[in-house]
Image 1 (cartoon, rainbow, N blue to C red):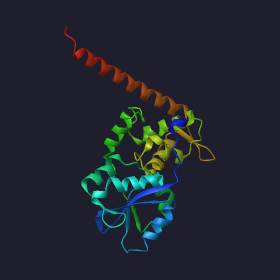
Image 2: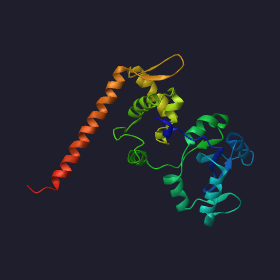
Image 3: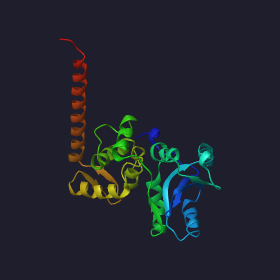
Image 4: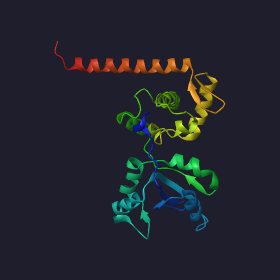
Length: 235
């Protein structure tokens, strides 16, 4: 993974929330204590709170978002969920919502819904492939986990479940629940191992399987590239 893949630790969180009974309005705010801030909201209304998006940030990023969507600003930090704002939240906004849910979600299970606005799963994969965060042969949670374990070890980091979930390449691709469930299946299939400290490694079988998947993908890509080259040739 290397230092280029490390996640920067920011001062706090920019959050976008709305009330369950008003899905046409969102609040864009900043807090260095997201758990406490979410708890404060719950004293204001009997309705459940929906976390639309949360990401680690500096205070300046909240101000920039307020300026960007000033045209749909209502009272204080509340904004109409216009098409442009919804598109930004879904397609362009950073997303550490799964990390926030893991860290703070257990405190208010009955009162908060975590429903980040995201592109479709395939669209998120396409973005990850095009940005080269993920190799093209990674197209499901099983392959992602095997690849992430290798990536983390190659960067000389310890590999636990949190590292796999929060790997920079997994920006809202696979939820924590999916990764935990898939880890259990991979352990049963003896493609990975887990030691007493709950650290994961690839078995020889898992490593060979990952190598084979990559080789097959590279071979298919080479064939497709060759066919495209021939298509423009006059024989």
